Amino acid sequence: MDIIDDKPNKLNILTKRELERQINLQKKKENKELLSADNEKLGFFDTIFSDKQSYIESLIDNSPKLPKSELPNHFNYISKEILTLQKYVSASTIFLRHYDLKKCQDVLQELSTRAKDYEEQLLPKKKFGFKNKPKQKPIQKNINGNNKYDEVDSNPISHLIEYSCGFFHKQNETLTMTNAEIFKKDVSVEHLENCIVIFKGSPSTLHLNHLKNCKVFSGPVSTSIFAENCVNCTLVIACQQLRLHSSNSVNIYLHVTSRAIMEDCKEIRIAPYNWHYEGIEDDFENASLDMSINNWRSIDDFNWLSDKRSPNWRVIEEKDRVKQWDRIE
Image 1 (tube, rainbow, N blue to C red):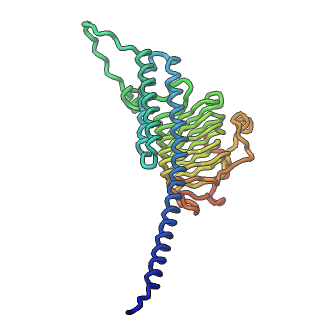
Image 2: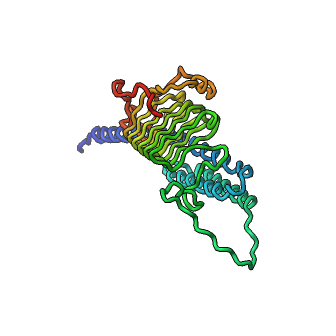
């Protein structure tokens, strides 16, 4: 009877088990990396969602303080902000857990309900009657187009909100506000083209949205600057935290005491903040920002999770930096 040597079979089994072990280890490593990336995105999402939620809540809470004539635009603006937040949630479902998604939907529903309740309370609908309605006069539009956004059905005029200020729908202008106008306020700059914007002072937050070929100069912002949809712009800004979205070809002269976060951005160039005006030291103190702490090189790109630096941003070489901004006004 022949004796069969089973050593090759045992060797094959051991080799197969070792291969399976290595594959399992690799899968665990990949899952861990994916989980870490998703956790980072989830943390970023929570911050943005919470900030936007607080902003909308403040809009709703401010409703009773506004003149009745401004309420239609005000509630129209709130509706658009809730819709924007809803779209942000929908775009983030790829990494949101079921629990997180349900929680966000509950928040959105609560915001919508609160806004609707306030609108019904402050702008009650007229009771039905048989009186003939007078014909409504058509809205007069400025020939130059300067007031084409004053209609309720078009983009809302955000500066009607008492505690918020800024510039909206401008072209080819130099726009300036002083500290007396922006101190501790939420400032918004939206839909500008070929403009220079100058804020000398210390606002609470700064929102930049849909800017094209613009230059924005801001004194120290005590909390966050939110910038999105900026194209071919220069931002000379100081803040606690910067959040940049969906922008490209932007030069940023930055002072940031916490972190700068970017997502869906390309061709972003960074240099240290170097704007100076009379009284800026007092503005930094009022904003509770330390002039000696500037993390302008600390950029977190949520589209680039590798250990290597993101290709979506780079440092402006010293020879290419603007040294002085004396002629901006």
